[in-house]
Figure 1 (cartoon, rainbow, N blue to C red):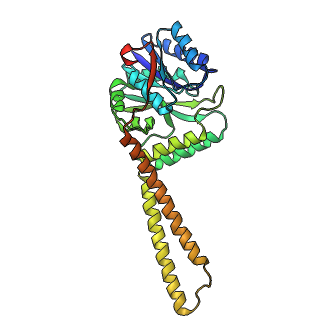
Figure 2 (figure 1 turned 45 degrees about the horizontal axis):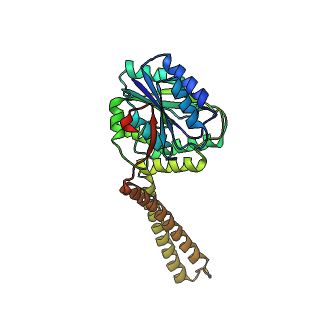
Length: 310
């Protein structure tokens, strides 16, 4: 069986096109499949539309969460309820083409791959989001402890063994594309040009995108804490040089009058301390979230699934 997991949050205008295109693309190469839509606490008619489709197609299942837990939590919920030997992931805004699932499935079943990532070779349209995304992947590629992750996201397909390994990783603050790379196995890519959003506004606004980027950087890179150390060393060197300069100036009688140099030194060292405290605070916050050990999500109801999982 092939399982496809798609999280949904307030996408009522896209549901019909999303279901039609995804079902058509899957039935072009396979008959034994399940399509798991995860309603992440939608406030519009998304859930009702999904349930209407579920009554028409027995391969469609709907996982309704008790509230909005976020994109990565919704994906995790769907993956944990998937029963296929091969499982795919796709966002619900149709920017990732479901027609590419056939090529991913072919590479998994005919070539020696365990995970196939959708790799973006370009993006249609012009948006400031595209610039931010490009800058994030550029930064992440150079500072992360994992490689070959640039221009990949949630759009992917994997076999059951790597999926089970992925689900054993219980981080509360999650970045699934990074976790997919961490588990190893043989990973391949299918390139595509990402479409523009068809309807409505993006559900991942800039603040959520920056939060996701921070989760990725803090979880998979030592760069932030190394930056604290670097800034501290720079501050120490600058302070020592300034101290030597002040002593020499006093000895030869050309010391500057006033407090400007003193204030600049205080502001410089203080800003370094504040940046370092902020970065350490981010790590402490993530440690605190992990120590709480709260569930990542709560299921309200699983329509069409195993009753034992409802």
